[in-house]
Image (cartoon, rainbow, N blue to C red; front, side, top):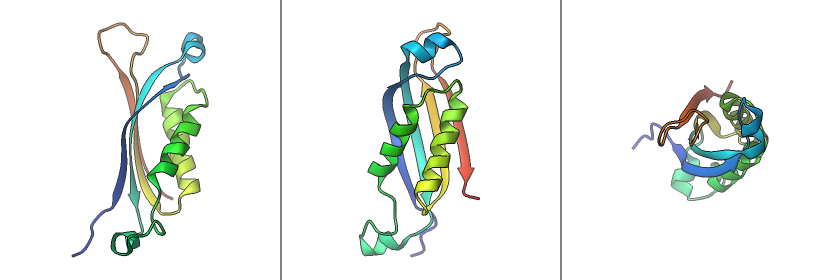
Length: 123
């Protein structure tokens, strides 16, 4: 068997944070949902059943939480910072896709959300 791709996913991370262009959004905050996938370049852990050679999804989760605590005007900036931090902390991550949704943006509507997705690869 040849492994074509190895991806770690964290889906529907739900957290409260303080992002937005409007000052009120950054002071009151809102609920956000994050879906993220991380392509891993080392397949060794698949055969040897060891955390060495892979990335702990708990550590990735902690990194996402740390970056979400820093207020930003743009969701794009939050996704960029999360991706940048993941690449700098985890050498085995070769590509990232992050979707960040503001669950109730200040635009009216019933169950409307606004989302940004950024896909990147390691340089």
